[in-house]
Amino acid sequence: MAGRGRRSRRRKSDRKNEANNAIRHLSTVLEVSLGEGIPIADNAARQILAIGKKHGVRPSSEVKRKICRRCKQSMFPSLTSRVRITSKTLISTCLRCGRKTRQGPDFARRSE
Image (tube, rainbow, N blue to C red; front, side, top):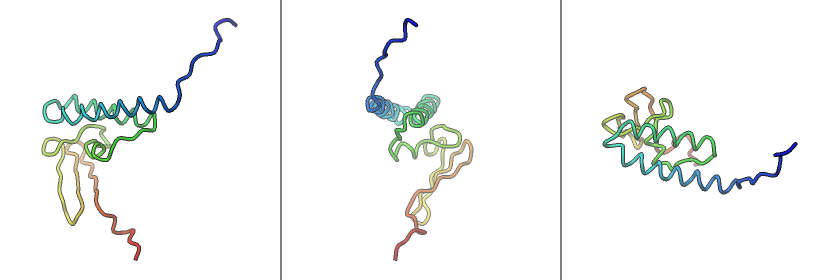
């Protein structure tokens, strides 16, 4: 049974750090390419979601807001998404698949 020696294993923290760095880099690519290269931004959005799912590292809330979770593509206001503000709630609609996301204060969980 030759060849079954001990392999060097990467530490979990090293993997998470590299995944964090990759997500940070892809986030800058997403923001820079949103205006000019829609296919590049879509690819970066899919990669951000895939890395986050595999390694358990999530992007920041600003980056999450720019990615549609249904079609896994980038959402750029006025090109691929519609943004409306109604009664202190931000409503983003993906113009490709029609999914709406709402962000704002949660009025149902008031503790009074």
